Length: 342
Image (cartoon, rainbow, N blue to C red; front, side, top):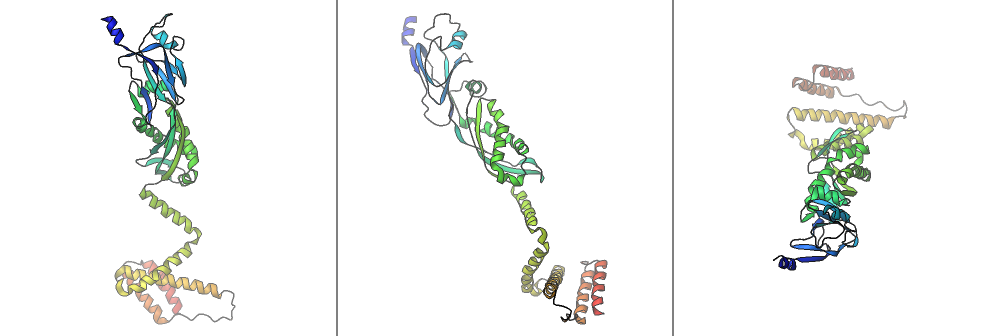
């Protein structure tokens, strides 16, 4: 019976892996019911590493090339199996292949805003996304910590873990780069390099090498972006606040004229009075600049008509009665207008 069992066994002469699809990091050679023949060949292609595992313990590791399996080429396995001088043939061992090709165009990104410290704003919540690439560096570490005895382990199964490592180090990358948020968009390469430096040790700990990191976009949540836009607008106005107010007033006057008596009530009267005063100040400044340097011979501007001043006093009195003007503000305006009557 034992002889028949021996005859029925299948012996493996060549062990190899031809990758049939992208995205496979680890693949176990099918050994069910088969044993490895003494002197058999192990073919490891240029972008691969092969690992022999004996009863869960990593033994020999083979790089690219064609290897003849003997006690000389399997020293660790020979020791683990307690082979003496003779090579036991046939024998069983799990053989795993690992792809060392670059795994490119892997995506990382913040599903939720990440809070970071910023030297301009104190703290901001930002969103960012980009790509990264990695490859297998230490197959033994990856087998013992990640892939284990799985028949196949893919990049898709590892994607969530690696993306988490990237996001975990965003704050560290911003801090180490010393770049303020407003400058991140113009310094994406520096930020990506800082993120790579901060994240690489975590990849190395599980047997991977982080090759490159790119950042495609960095932004604020919508509500914070609106606040930033307002701040940028104020910065653009800068020293020209007076011109900005004049421009806004000139733009608003046609709308007030169209409204006629439609803008009734406290708000309407306040807007009408405010726009009139602002327009009067603007015209007075323009007139003063235009007449500058003409000389004392220029005729003086005509004094305000008494009926106009009285009408304006009545409007001011109405605004004070409605609580829009305080007593102090009304008294100051009244004193100015009465001086013009004198």
